[in-house]
Image (cartoon, rainbow, N blue to C red):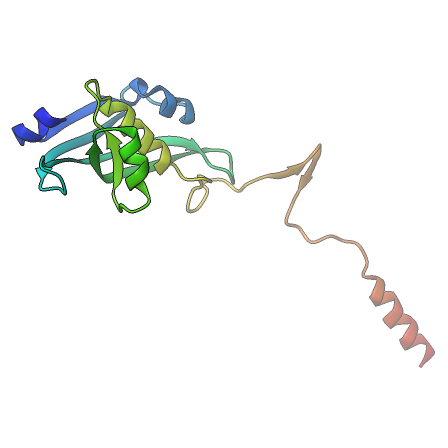
Amino acid sequence: MLALAQEGQPLIEITPLSQLERLAQEAPGLAPDAAVNWQAQAELRTGSGTEPDVWLHLQAKTSVPLTCQRCMGVVATPLEVDQWYRFVATEDIAMAQDDDSEEDLLVMTPQFDLLAVLEDELLMALPLVPMHDECPVAPVLQVGEEEITDEVSEKPNPFALLAQLKKDKS
């Protein structure tokens, strides 16, 4: 990350979603050519210590097929990531500063896995309950073996019988 920050050039990539295994498990019917467009820009900023802080700006856009929880069909779900991170030297420092910092903190490691961070962010961007705005087919509600419909029941109203008895007495 330090070298990327010193270079000052953004890292712009297109990564097949099939390479992000945990995300691919959440997306049934993922097309083989489905990909995420992403960009990472690292920079050095004056920090509280003698050395400048390394910051990372991660941006990504993609669309994944999820199962609509209303009609159980496939719904293309757009995902976006736009996140800033500040790197710290150790996990202890990250834990100590986490409550007081507005940005997310990451520990500077020699073999930093940027794709794992990208995948984590995309997983967190997934909706809790994916749904179409308007389902292409009407949802079928079913309890056990019995299908539930919106049709009005033909059962007689018990109060209608009482109303009829009252009319008969008058």
